[in-house]
Length: 226
Image (cartoon, rainbow, N blue to C red; front, side, top):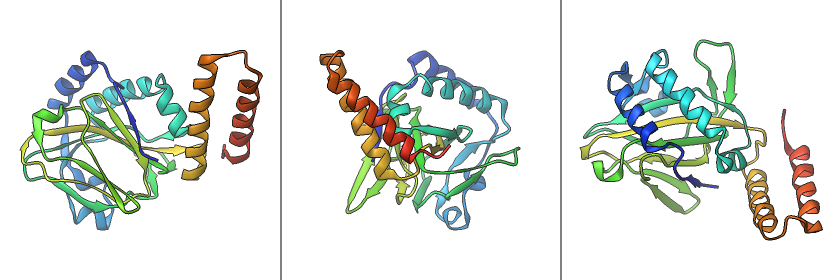
């Protein structure tokens, strides 16, 4: 399931992000890559210890916690500390699958990466190339969203970022460990949640809405890992 989420950040928040990360501590992006991914990765990332990155990451996380579509689609249990990357001309990230387990820097904890997320911070007109290409079976989804929009997709999928040929591609990215590990089960719950919301908007007192809501929570109770 690939989900696009519009306007996670406001124009004022986007402006703050761009200004703060301009003076952040940028490092070689291979610091978070596994052995295979490092061979095909050329970009830059804000160091995990950078105070600008930490401040902006907390701001983004607070917005995600107020975003119903993210909560419904991800059912988040843990969110990896949000990171930032940039691709200048000639930079790209070849085909890869994200590491299944990620240690959280500075802690003894690790998370399972059920979902990957990219939050675009630069407008599509500001750069050429830099598309996120997500392989979904035989179909390849090419994603290049307006600044402030985000895409959420299974971390188990093969994906890559095409080479930037003009301008700079800026983005925040992170991983989510979901309460529901199975992608298909999570997709069913998301569809059911959407249907409940639509039916409730038409007639909140319809007994069928209550029954469906009960089915939704009973399925979460059956599938969730807490």
